[in-house]
Length: 130
Image (cartoon, rainbow, N blue to C red; front, top):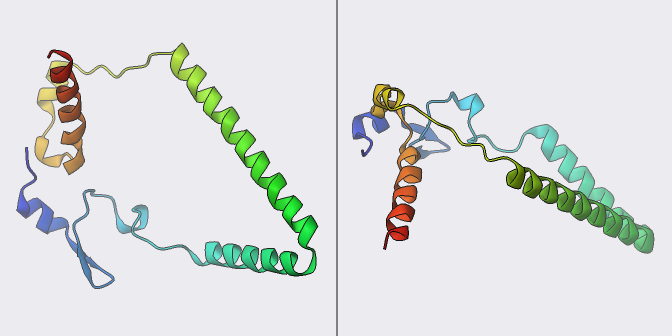
């Protein structure tokens, strides 16, 4: 069911002199429309300055630290991916919803993207039957 223009217009706002149509009813402080915060900017800026200073004054140890950090990060990511693979193979968790609960949902309050997932699943089921 397409979103009615009145509902979209009611939630539209001006952000940085651009019209945006959020697909959520979250308040602005809880949304992702804000930029990087000042603390994050200071951390990133000081990290870049330290990296450049290290590359200028101590090239080899700085490169060794960078490679060690990236290797540790890659190893941790590999362990996390293995954990997620084993967990997904071990458990099959699905959400079951009764027909009454589905009929009780007011479709006008659902976000726009909530129709994409059921349509994708229907397409997969339709393709499987061919």
